[in-house]
Length: 315
Image 1 (tube, helix red, strand yellow):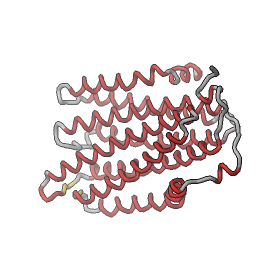
Image 2: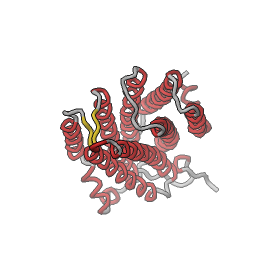
Image 3: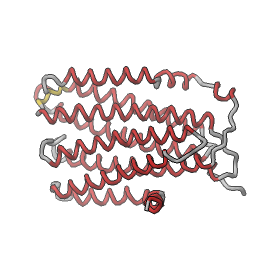
Image 4: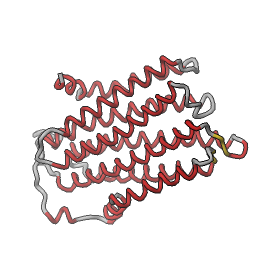
């Protein structure tokens, strides 16, 4: 049974078809500018199913024996990122279905936020599934062919990135993020300045990380399987960055049109805003750990041309 599920998940037609089906579904839901409870439940359950299947599949891959410990590290860190995203969706739809979460933007922008959120997560899960095909190839065809001098060769860009993603630095940043949201949430009021500070901080981290991942993709372009693994994860990260940008842009628009550029929030609306912010902070934290593991993979993973793991076949 497990092998059958894995075979279905690894079928590229499924990965390509999921975003198309998601788009058709959200167009259907948004035609009448209203979202019935059953439509929201269908959307939520489909995302839960996809997200937890992705998590279970990748976690199962991490338990397979391998000669390459970096692959296990990548599986674990990607699983952790999926766990954060799945938790965010559970929180959002739980509050939405119980009627405890109010509109996040003025109509019709509120429907746009919901549509973008749904499509974003489908694209993210699909990109991660697509990239796992290449990580699995690399794991199966791994050969350790690295010299010590190559591992010691680091550019200034890599040195800067290594300093930023040091575990101690990341823990300090997470602590500051929690402290920031705790301070601004005491009065259950959101101002344009507080929202912009939160959003811009996330955007800086997300787009900096995306730029680094893109550079790593270019650097590994001659190792096809590794490059495509990084491309898939980069696409997933970029999709979530776009969602964060659009979400905060619409939030800022709502606050700008509010008297005094501030908005009083209900307790659960404030809680969702805080937990949503924490979720993306934790996601970017895990994304940095994934990027760190990918850098390690780019340093010590060399596969001779003509092998399946290289992504090429003999001519």
